Image: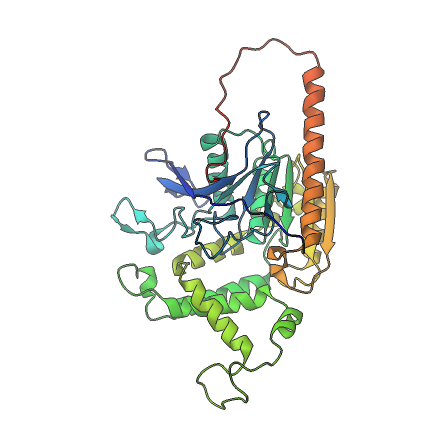
Length: 411
């Protein structure tokens, strides 16, 4: 794999909006406010303000997509292998923004946030949010806080890819290009089923208390099981066989009991479940999986072709051959609907046997594909801008523009 440089030490920023009485109207009809948004930025905005890229995270992700929060931070951002100087998403070239979704638990408003009406955490009083609500909040951040009218690209994998599609549909005048990776236009029955099993694990934890657990012990056992179930769906049989096989964990023979893990794969899943509960909230898991379940562009628009009627930007749709959770045929459905609307679309199925999470790995195929697409898109946008500037223009009144934002988190 190619060596990559880091963006360095970064800082998470926070922005509050939708203060009463100007709460945000959610798709459910409920109004929510105030709303806090956690986000990070990397790189510099160009004088033309034409190099901004928004990255949307997956279910368990957050705003910390690259770099480290301190010199002794042991863990880099969740996509540090792809975002950075000279990388697939090149922070020497682009101004990169990554916000945390509402409904989560990593700085943006969610069920663990304080309900201003009660002074206590929302719990299950938090309103149901959808992918379109997440995107509406992101658009407010981009347009109101950062003062941007255009995004060179919106990029995301898995649930992040759902947000990418929603962006292209809801804000076509803003999105110059869109890159959904390992994603789908609607979650299938199998995906919903896995989510429901995970939610039942949380419901069944005696510490869940119908979501009202913030003053006591969190339902960590249920959430750990939910994460173990989910993590199995992110891998593939090939990757599990290659990494673990039937290898034993710290023993020469099986124990013939229900004590310590016999197999390495058992120990690995227990570790993943245990580490997940240290950084994630059980109620956020419930809300975000429900948002993914509800995402259905066909139901919203009558057909996938109709869903993309207003799309203007070019698309790069990426799938992985070994992804059985969001298989390639679902990406091809998106491609066909885009092409039916004469949207400039590139499709790429990357060869990988590492399952759904392959897009998070250090992969030269993905790196090169993103780099080439983004550079071609930027060149096309600048050619178009140059041709417009050469055309005769009517006199217009001068407008005051926002000062270009810089990399608020970059050293």
